[in-house]
Length: 153
Image 1 (cartoon, one colour):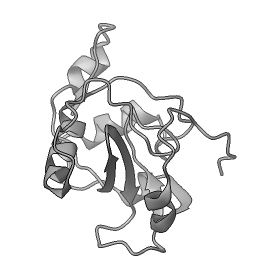
Image 2 (cartoon, rainbow, N blue to C red):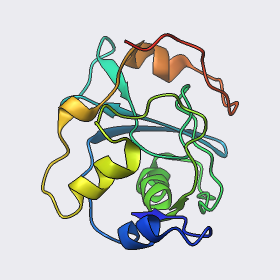
Image 3 (tube, rainbow, N blue to C red):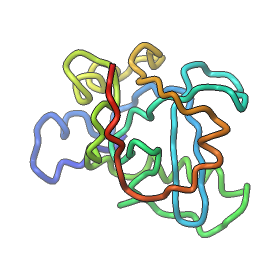
């Protein structure tokens, strides 16, 4: 993963370019917009599967990604699926996007990724579970960079 270290942040510089485990992810692309959610289990979801917040900077509450340094695939078909995923992970994670809670980890976002460097698996317990189901995610056409004011448990 690549984290922005424009502010000369020593922690981010030390984290930059290391290998990290990732949860199962669900990407949705339409035009030049990308949405991403995490799955609690690495298995094929159904329409009723509840989703989780993607544990990454540049992702908003509604799942839309700030595509800042991403290279948006020009191909607009299923053949571009791998290109969207590559582009997401080859981009620079720069900001928390105002999301109130990306993950459940004592110490926060950066501490979690530091603890995961070089590990084999992403622990499901760190994911923030959402009430949103896959069917709702697929129908969502909100591509605004916004966050909900929902209560966190």
